[in-house]
Image 1 (cartoon, each protein chain N blue to C red):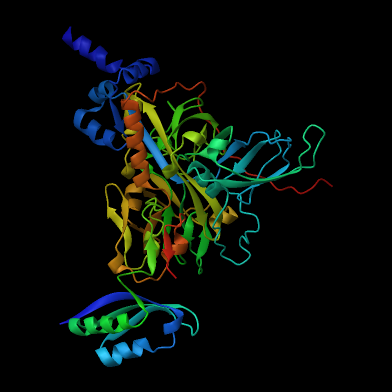
Image 2 (image 1 turned 90 degrees about the vertical axis):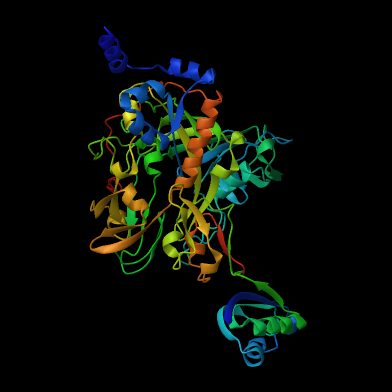
Length: 409
Length: 137
């Protein structure tokens, strides 16, 4: 009899979102970070740990180019239907309603010489404007219009801060790449890429993932993270509003189902007025352009043993693929050079093509760890509840390329 | 016993005509290793250098410099690392030839700047996406 009860208790262990949320609201949820859960399960065993642990917090911090925000400035007197706008001289998209604009993270400042004198410095752009807005700084709005009978004003120049705006809503079509390429440069000259400065003749290597802390590497088959999931976006309560752009689930995976290349992505949104400046940072990549680095935290509800097992994935079990960014990446040859685990990459040096190569990162493990801890504290205090996805992320979706066929003759 | 001090000298316009380095070598027996310098007549300028010599000679040299209008900073002043701007990503690490910028803690991957080891090559400045490293010059 006792045996039967134990058996039933372990094999059928499952929790619901509702029961986990009830425990969170009561301040009784057991929450571990994606790093802590590894040792915890080693110590306690999967079955016992699955009964105890309610939530595992995952996170990432790094440049996420497909980010931006919708801003609503409110109406001036007389009114204006803005057709062109610049915020701190960075152009925003105005092809929407009168005083709504979309400011993209990679937009350069007006008159930036870009790569005219290569490599350009790209000191300031959309990502930096977003950083300054979140930091509460005043920014300059300059806007033009053709004027209409109901919106007669044709020009505005004024200073605004985020609290002066009706809405500042971050809407990012692609964040949290499930895994990512590792970049090297086999050519004879240094190259400047979105993976940073790559030294010539394989003298440096860059990766960009939080590895064992990264949200989609802890839920490789999208069993809990889906459209509608609650996320922590730079300190604000946000959500996954869609699959991210370039979401690709049909990729090569290791035996543990973890992709060995870029795969799933998330489209995220949250109120920028609630964000913490520490996790919203403009990025300047010499010779490449500007971007925005963001901190994202995603809680994983431990609904069953399998979901818990997947959160115990560690850096030594997650592999990433090396590509040559001087030739194979830009020319899309499909050639790859090798594969390393994040444990090997984080050691600071790996051996590739018979050469010892120093390794660096664009993703901050330190900040990701901090986000895991901050989100854990919010869940433990009962202030952050989880939400069940309303739709799963596509599970069998391939990546399309673009065929350039030229104009029809 | 001979010691080495890293110093940074700031020259106002009035002092750019004086052969200060020559005096440091000749009158105080110092060995000079200049990392970076910009001294143009009629303009303000700076010198970032190591001085090696007897402690007493270095003290006398500093006393001499203080009779001029030169501002002396002891320590590395050529490269500034802003701890607030640093996100600890590590993009600088492979570009720093001396390990002055390195992970201080392998568990948390916190990055730290060790000023003494920095040779002011400035390779980190373009490598940092967050503008955490900047030049004083």
